[in-house]
Image (cartoon, rainbow, N blue to C red; front, side):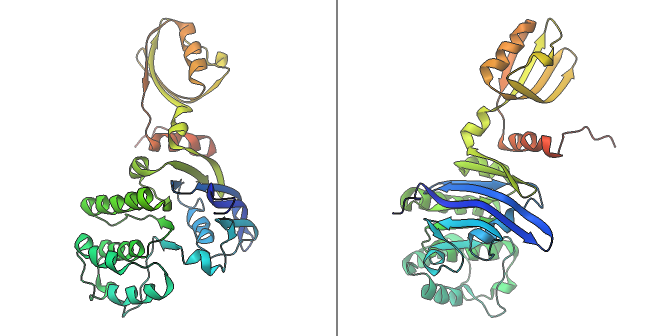
Length: 306
């Protein structure tokens, strides 16, 4: 194993222009081997452009994209170990699952025919049916069936479960998690479904306007932002909150609701200066963390009056 096996996928100072427009602005991203990494960001952040560099479809204008220590672009050794399911699937007019499986056997050295046959009972798709005539959800199932049968070391997914019904989504996640656990598959997922990512990801990177705002262990990410409900005897002075930043404040009667970024102990010390009647530390969802992390980047949470 190479020296970069700890960071199995490494993106270093990645820059990409489309014409004069700088789409990616020096991205540094690190995905550990055998982990599930969630890439999140608003529409137009550059997620799909970044993914197309990782899967070798685009060549960078600056920086490097490495997998297992090797450049990805035009590297057949790496690409044979990778399966990619894009958001917009494309199939030829005569493609069937059976036909594509024969093609995959030629390009993926570890394509598992036994697994392919076994997964028939999971996806319940006619392998001889024309894929172009299938619904969006069935096309996604076909793509997963073929990708998982290829036994990839690296699985790259762009909005992977969009169009799948809840039962099929659960089946797909189960298969992915099984491969991570048993085979050490490295998975990178871009999705707007933050609730599902929260259940499966080890690490999260937040992309905004072509820059990576942060990447952290999911549990660590949540320890930096605190959702607090409290009530005071005396009105608090936010200028004395030296080791934290108030991202959101709402007052309903005597109850203060805060989202505060910073050290938990320092925040509690500040709150206790004002004789709180109670302090409740409430759990934050990944969606809330995402909203408040990019709040300072032009996405402030504002009341909408209709």
